[in-house]
Image (cartoon, rainbow, N blue to C red; front, side, top):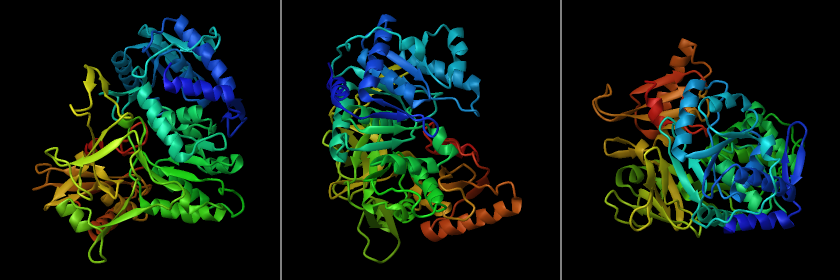
Length: 543
């Protein structure tokens, strides 16, 4: 039995904690013991249905109450779990069908588990002869003992965040999963005295691993709602933290900005956020201004600023690579902008010239080694900017692709994560995605800096700005960039022109570079991944 499955079973046997679902309507709480009993029956049904050790099970479901026992059931049955990307009301169902079929063929899925609200999708699976289960059928299976699998058997085939039209899945083994969760649990001091509150989607690694597998293994009490619940009424997140005494929660940067605006409208004394000791920001670039504004708004409700926790992660490292220290205020590296952009060095600012503030993301977990190398693969020293590489027990050995298995690591075990950054006194600092860096007049300009400047202009939707590279020949004489910003005033021609002028002025003032194009778009125009990250390459196509 793998250490992960063994740990989950031990928690189910002893823990008095469990999982609360059903908010904001009728809340239902099940202990980890009760959930485990249901998972054993699901495992029995999967094994009886022919699931082989290491076999892939795809899951199309949106309700945490259903996803949790199914996930554990797949692991108890010795299978690997893949959460399928979910259609939304705006999804072209023909495109979704074709993309989903590609994924199912790629992972060689032995079956698909379908839950609410996606039961209407089953005729598509029937039409293509794909075996599928509904949850009611699975929960009537026989109670079975866990299927024995080794540490290097796959536990998750995690779909990457890009377009499913060209699918790829990170192969996460039981060894990877246990190592990363062990590190996370120890770093955050997870235990039965803690309460995690989450609305994150389970098809994202932060939702599935950080906000389901971690509580399931460590014994945290878990309060789980859906992304739709949060997006429909963002203040629900804070209300649940207050009602249940939430101690740990996590979300990407845009969500903290949304919650900040909501909290500003709430009267002091209405909420209690004093129990929150870990407010983690990750999964997309962290804007220090966003977290400063959140702290200001949340302190009115007893929030401790030291609870802000900045993290760095990737599916290739199972989930977390590093987290800043718990109970320590957000640390920012203030560096000389010119040295960063022209010399690839993060020189501490001395008070003269432009300054960049970049969040420090903590020291790497024990199971992840991080180094920085130049374009020739030569290791770089402290505060030298280059390519970030990983290796260690948490790090995947490869991907499942339509063309078969693709190794992810080199001969020495290093995996190039695709990010550019540096190490500062042992802490990881990320500058941006390497493929998105804009090179102008010998400067490396990071799109996140441009996006933050443009996003501060009144009328621009926070978190909905994309800065994209324009190569020579794209209507420009040399490499430049365009800014695409969403605004609710996009259909007002005069207002849109004024916003575009202000965006240009703000970017020039803060970045000292002029965009070749500024385009103001209606809300919902910018392409994003299923987990909400900007797809800059696709956004460039809007021009």
